[in-house]
Length: 79
Image 1 (cartoon, rainbow, N blue to C red):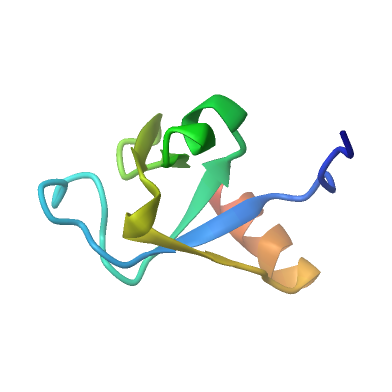
Image 2 (cartoon, one colour):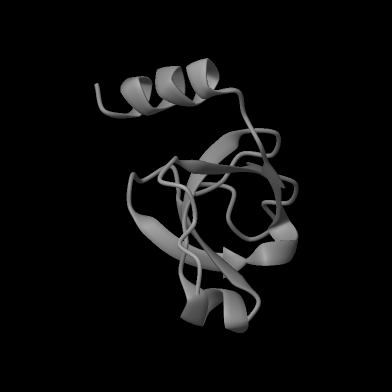
């Protein structure tokens, strides 16, 4: 199996029904690749609490970001 590139991966939230305190529609979230969760139709996402949780993948859309944007978002999330 090929290893994915070592960059961060981001998704945009499309639906926060039932999770209004944890997710904001239109906001970018970092997700953590998790093959077991993805096999169940879930994405492991770092939500508003700063912790990672598995949410239904239909709540999100994966996005590719230019390297400078990715770097800035990662730096902001660690400050």
